[in-house]
Image (cartoon, one colour):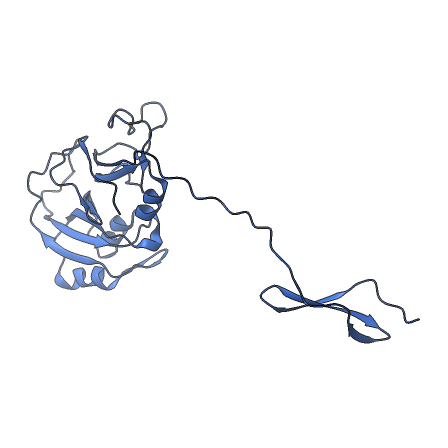
Length: 233
C-alpha cells in the first residue's frame, strides 16, 4: 500500500476555497472535494439609535479642551453644555476656537467625523502677512506637508468676521508686520492641518476659528454659547 505523507498540501483556489492534495509515491493526488474555509472574524453589532437623539452646536472658547475631562487646571467642555450624554464629533485644538458638534448618536458622530465622508470644514484664519494670489493658489492646488500632499482647498482673502469676539488672551501681533484674514475650506482632518498649510506658504496662523462643518454653521454663537439643531444628516 502506498504511503501517504502526514502533511497535506492545501491549494487556495479562489475566495478562501481550498483543495487538498496528498503526496503519494512522489505524485500529488487530489484527496478531497473543494472546501470553503470560513473566517471567525467578530462582527460588531451597530448601536441602536438613542430614543432622543441630540445634536448640539457649541462655540468652543480658546484654551478649552475638546473633551469632558482633563488634568487639574485644564478647561474642558464640562459645564459648557447641560447634557451628560453627548460627545464631540471630531476635535478642535485647544488653541483654536469655534464650532464643535456634540451628539449622543453614534452613527451621526461617525458620519460627521470619519475622513471617508470628506465633510467640508470652513475656517476663518488670521495670518501673519498678506498672501499673494500665487500663495493662495498653492493652498487651492494642495501643499506638501510632512505627512503628504493636501487635497485641493478653497482659499481666499476675507474681511475680518462681523461681530468678532475678542480673544483671551489676545493675539500677539507685530506692529511692523501686517496681517489679514483668510477663509479656508478643507475636506480633510489631519492634525493641525490648517496651521501647517498656512505655514507652508510662509504665513503663520495667528488665530483660527472654525465657522462651519458641512451644513452646520456658527451663525452668531458667542464663545461658550450653544444651541440644539435637528440631528439630521
